[in-house]
Length: 221
Image (cartoon, rainbow, N blue to C red; front, side, top):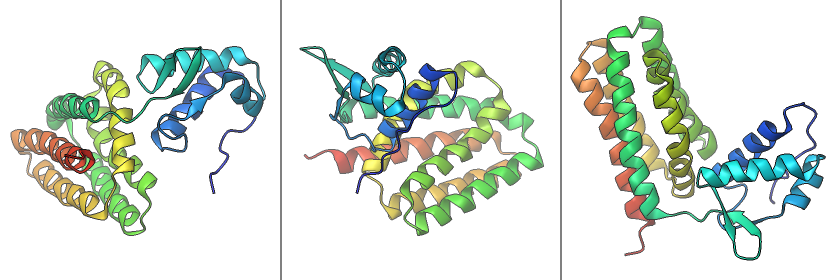
């Protein structure tokens, strides 16, 4: 049974709250690909006027998660395999760049965060919690982003990562998840040994290999 995660909003930042809620619902497939979105009905569920909802939908459309159709109707963007392939290439390169910037700055506490995230990822996979697994995988790579401290990389990733996460959730299998866990272990080992070039290569390969697995499975040919 579909959960009703859209509830009345009590905060003042209606537009941002609506945006974040709808974005998460789209990424986690709570709102299905190609599902119609009615701003009036959404506003009623949120308990607010239609203006913040329209503004949030426009922002999501700019990010490629929502699309407008002829006749003034709006829907969740369908999963686009070719778009996801391109996104994986960009995301892999950006995360590799973040790792390169972060490598000389990594502290023991950062490596501990990587280890904890990877253990949490394995547990989520073993429990079959796909949403938790995808979120925790993001937490692992966020360590490098935080240490790198480059907001432009984060800004660029915010547009591409949701497209990847939707495909990842739709095509999730335990095997692919455990592959990531093992690859993360190699990254952590390289971090401990301060093997900077190896870290960068492994981080990029981690994303590219995941992209190859997901897009191959999703491709009907």
